[in-house]
Length: 163
Image (cartoon, rainbow, N blue to C red; front, side, top):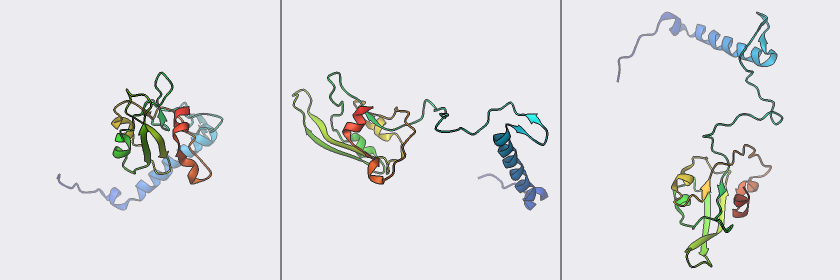
């Protein structure tokens, strides 16, 4: 561990830092409200930080993890083989899978029940990384996850396949 540096008198008083923080916050507030600084009558060339949602969509990063979805095979059936890797790797344990025998003899199992509780999910993406057959993905770019009751956050297999 390094040597602890001594603070200057200005840093020890901490009042200048408080005033500097208030100044920065006020400048951002004025830029967002008026689009320019009214004190200097100077227009700001930077974009305003506020988005008028839902009329104006916020740009989404390509690395952003959205809501989950299940992949389908070419015949339209679910790609998941109910190996339980995603449910095992999920830290909060929000994935529930019940396996059943698949009618096709080349496929061993399929999920008769596949549910994800988004109310408990922490969107870490470990379920996507653990899936050996790329059955579950988080690439929906769906930002609207608000619901009126907690039971609506449990997403079933049919809802996951609709995406």
